[in-house]
Image (cartoon, rainbow, N blue to C red; front, side):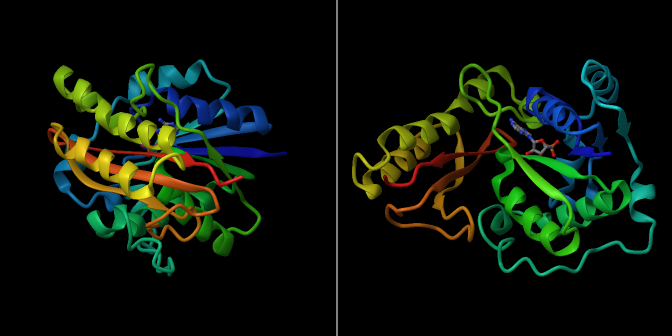
Length: 261
Ligand code: AMP
């Protein structure tokens, strides 16, 4: 029989639930983990402030088809001897998020590898919201869990465009409004894609972001396989990735840009 697996850090929202629903549809059984993984946080403050809401999470999951929720303690996950996965990510962890969050992706693959070994799923489900994470987990799974299928799921957004995220809970009403600048920048790039010069559409988006209340960390157009920055229109599909601070909340988002026809 088949087993679908959805790893999460809790504070669940409809983005998570879309993964759970898909995992339930495509497998005989589906299991969800909730674990705020300490080793993937590069700032202790972010770990401490990360939203946690176990009761609401479990109640949300009870109206899905999930067969079980796994809520391990940090002790359970890290007192097993093998506490840091040594794995060469071919530089995929040196760009984008990796530049700003030292050690983050090594923490992610360490915990995800532990979960894969423990749970032995048939398929595991990840959101395109964390595009770089998905690419990195694919690489790790190809090497260490060759029979496991990694399934990529589309980004779920609020009605006004903001990508759903557990961290959105930390935004004040005014910051919630300001955070719209991220998705608006991505949508404007997609709307103008291949219609104006590459430099002008990226330059305009950066200018708008820099004059907004958000603090931009990066806005890059990347190759979806190598994650390398593109400086002109490619013939293939590409991805616009953004990270910015709104108040003391760090947000990321991305959008897929079509290949030329
Ligand atoms: P997290 O709890 O933030 O670690 O996320 C758990 C999983 O849910 C990851 O695979 C995320 O990419 C995915 N996810 C988070 N937010 C969204 C969203 N808005 N749409 C789709 N997937 C999401």
